[in-house]
Length: 635
Image 1 (cartoon, rainbow, N blue to C red):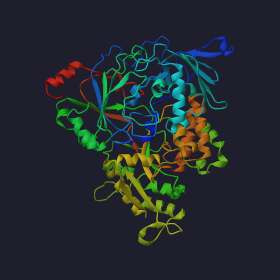
Image 2 (tube, rainbow, N blue to C red):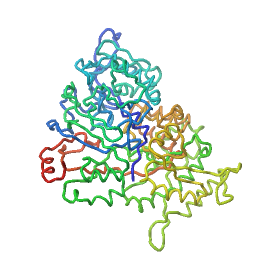
Image 3 (cartoon, rainbow, N blue to C red):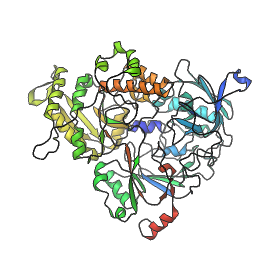
Image 4 (tube, helix red, strand yellow):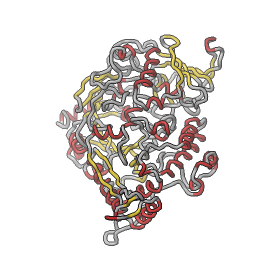
């Protein structure tokens, strides 16, 4: 089944590369810094030393001699099956996929370190040991796609315009920055607010997309547009067919192609995203060469549909690639802004009625595992009873936490085990679990009454509406709805179009909504977007559940303030444990693998980098492509 990506996350975070700082070699700096001891370095990492020295030539997992050329093509995905904007920084409009190709940042991440970044537009950085500020020394040769120089004033403008006119999520992401100032045309300083955790703030600043002030002096930043913008990155918009496709091609005048962070990557001259009405139409197009690389999110298609002629002839390959990142928080998120979800017993009862085991056996071909943690498939997920340092973290909040946090194992959804004697297969409805969920609803004051429906003491029926814009999810939701009806819930599925889906998510007009967030190996300020009070009512927020709890706010800040990976791990476990107890979602499933299929026209490095799918380092093999064309496989 699809791994549904929450729309807000993609839209508001792809323009920023959030990576974390660390400690390098202290040097003496100019008297203008009042002889303050600072660290000057070529990169920065959250914990420990950087893997690559200052004179590194390229990342280890790339082919530095990879040829440039050809076009890589994908299916366009995201909030909907279409797009109507080339402005990814505002709430208005549905942006095209791939717009991050247009923008560079001061720093860039590496594919084989979980939390390191190295100079891109910045050649070096300076910061004190307490990281209360950071200075980026910018490369004077850097230019925008129209040839104008990239200056410190553009960095200041980028920060200010995103904060003042960007999507509301930027106010949360950038709130710990006190000021940004241009010290000279190629030297910019970020100063952070006193008293905040500064561990990740230099890298947060370094991950900010650089926007051209001179361009937006004449263009309204607040409007969605299909006019290709001026960018700071390697690529420019070459062709736009609104709602159908978008192509980005290499800027032949790009200044930074030979930087160590760029060598061996971005090997295609162009990248195209093709949009289709639905998954079925997209897959049919892929089978005939409509696009070249497919990450498969449908277990049904993966298990049953990869028997088409191009695959049998060896023209198309399919693989399961390792995914060493946390597997993502995918689930159906309750909208806690609605009174009927106020009681956690209600949320737990509703969540218990989702039969993952039956779904996995019957619908998913046993390809998935059950998600139970917000940091699934990582060392950050809580297990068993709290103990040791994790317990010490939770003790700080004992008087504000339910006692069960300390006396019961981290919450895991019930396992459906009831089978049909005639077939030996799992039953869709387990009566034992139904009885347990029914007792919780009774305790919460929702009793079964007339017509078998649950009502509260005011006579209000408990209704539950699922909204969906993807018919492929029906086969998962309809059995779940049937189980909810058995519980006495007036549950229903409403189909809406993609534009309505986007708007209702931004306005929090839903009971439950499906979404998936991909968590970092080193979670940091992005957690404020998902789980804190300040994001609960910010329009377009990634806080889908609307959870607002001072304890969660403080735990998030503790995670952000962690000074060692060991400290981060125990604090993240404490956060995970409390979140799971609160029952803010119905956890779904995960794979732990990238399921990919591709037309066999690519060259690739011998090893996949540990923290990337790796296709960003592939290249077009012209010999393979020539054979394909000669055989009539591709045009």
